[in-house]
Image 1 (tube, rainbow, N blue to C red):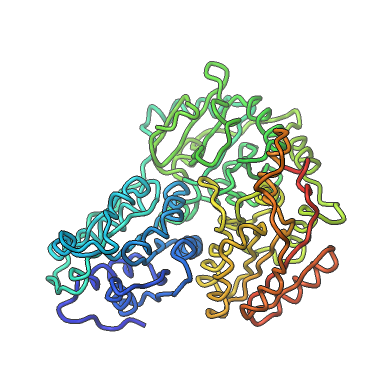
Image 2 (spheres, one colour; image 1 turned 120 degrees about the vertical axis):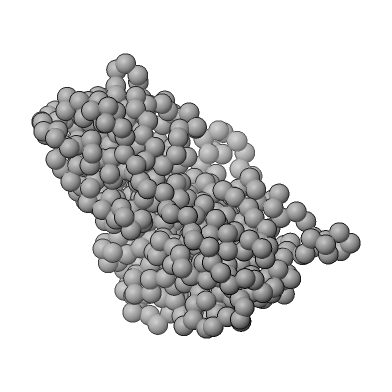
Length: 549
């Protein structure tokens, strides 16, 4: 419920009001004395402030909430160590294309000339890992607030940092709010470019779609919510197989016969998907951002032999691949425009699509009696179809991203560009806060779980019913696997086994240790009926990922 701000409003109130107008209803962080006015302004504006145990986790919770609401995530951090604690997750938001407003307290400029305690140039810290950085002032509070939201959400989304000096936050400002700049209109290619694209589509015998994060982000725009339906209509009309990056999983339901699932980190999947792409005569990159992809996806397009359309939110400055036609614009509108008047024809008549799906199923079997694949398969079978899942970084993420079927956009959330550890638990919590009636499950390795275990206390305080699954093998499994592959001596990758189920109970939730499919099914059933969160420790063998990813 909104509360009236002081009259005239403080600069912090102006900022909070603009964030509320942008749809924000949640903010996450840990306050210090320097941001108390900000917290007060957010609460008055109708934005709930959620106290977390660490700013890095708070930023991931903010991202998790964004995945469910479409409103920019908000991180609140105090001056100095508070702001710096959030750097990893802010850099992740930059690389993973997450709109986030980073509100940091700071010492007033004149005070900083003679006062040094906790003082550093925070704008210099955040400048390379954000789309923009500002210092709030009273004369332009409205403009800065509006710019921050616009920059964070338009084009390719990302974080924007605002330093809020202590006295500026409390200073009254002129109540007039200037007219805001109109939101940029989505574009489609020029008529001559469209004509050429239609010609190429009409004659394509083996077209393939590679769908990425730009397409899924544009689906949050109220003007372009038809992205998923537009994609489905297109691929069914022209019989086009779809490969997605991990972020775009579920934009086409993954049980659809034309869905070939996600790609990004799995060499086993690449051996099946890349040859299919190389056999294509038309490649359509729909919002495809290669920041998620491994080196095998560099220069996969062969000019003179293949045609490629690249439809993205920003120009290609990465040079990981080139294209015949580069379109910076609206993915859904462009996909619709290039198909206008183009009659469908028989494509992929040799059965390659069905063969690729069968090969992927064989590469990631679900019939193991126990192990990481059995854990994933059992969870997918027991939990509801509309379950929201998160994955931490590590060997389990590669396997999960190939095996966990998504039937809607954002059904699986992860750090797929920066690939940082410790993200799954807070991502799941943020999604659960924003969407409390959905079943939410996070998957972590034991090392990633230990990084953020303290946030279980936050889950208890919030009354969340999130399910936290932990793969327990007492090792940094992916790094240990690479170590063995390079025939190096085992060092720095193993640690002791811990009682993760007991940790769950100690923080006020339920805890189960499982070593079989039957025990896991029972734990999942109990978790879905529990009053609070549940930690499920799935004990697997060392080396259980060998040959699996």
